[in-house]
Length: 459
Ligand code: TYD
Ligand code: MG
Picture (cartoon, rainbow, N blue to C red):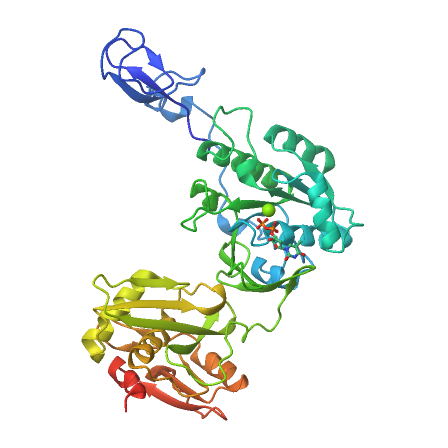
């Protein structure tokens, strides 16, 4: 629902102002303006409190028992990029609204242009609305991608009303708005990119998608803190929220679904940025490992599970001493969680880093949020502190609790099998994840407590 307009009304004289002011412009009273909801032309003040009750306001509408409503499967069309389809839950959905966020330059426009071209080739009419680049720039990109003969319709426009009118005239099956922060509506006086504009424009586009069945894909910028710029409400409004992750210095990009009304969340799609655009990586399990010819201290391989796929990610730690104000820094892992793990290490395993700088990093720009990373992070830290590498072919996973206990990770067997497939030979896992039948090639140490796990690095 659109937010009602607010006005500031003077307590003393009833005069109004569109903004808050210290002094009433009508009667000159100080500090008398309070925020009120602007009254609509039809209703008086306190509309719901009329003596007739609610019935005077609108006619009651018929209701239907849920059982009498027929469920409809959503119609999906694969985009032609299988890694994108995987995160979308199988393809673009009729009338669905997708929000794609990510850092500048990570490849949002590239991916969407490739996807639109593939959809257009499969016979769906598409429209690419660009507010950030000119038509010529997009054409240049299409040449780079080798799709210069593409039939994708392009519109370089940032005014919402014109965009909506064009969509209505062109009737595409899929429309991309690149980006929602550049679009502005004539109805509002605030600047493009402001919270009010972003919210209003997204709301209009969402309503249009729902009423016409056109799929709308919105590109959103992220702030320095990594959240989508603009109101949180944007995430609530849309059906699917995808985030682009990855280090712009490495070629790999991850797309993660953090909300999906039409599919699983936390599913990831993996791409590599090449000279000719983004290419899907269908077997990504080993791309986040760095190559060490000999085992080095401060490195531990984690088997993490992203959506339906296990991924092996190298966790690196550097513990360096003697600083008067020790720093804790993490890249790709949560810093608060790191502080907690350090406290658990010190209390329950006697590994004290209180006076040390601690840096941890997940290789390849991948972001890890699952607690099953705990054990690998702790092992990497302990390994760096002691200057002792973990054995060759070593992996770990497991969540660590505040009491020093190691809790099982979901779908442990799958993780172990993937590690064995990639040639890893030793695993430290939570006791409850120990497989009932041996996995060929993998020797497994099941542990219950942090100190047991850290003993691997003793002696
Ligand atoms: P872009 O898709 O414009 O990112 P966003 O829309 O998220 O800001 O970013 C593309 C980046 O990728 C840019 O730095 C250039 C690079 N790139 C390639 O390496 N190969 C390509 O084929 C293309 C089109 C871009
Ligand atoms: Mg862009």
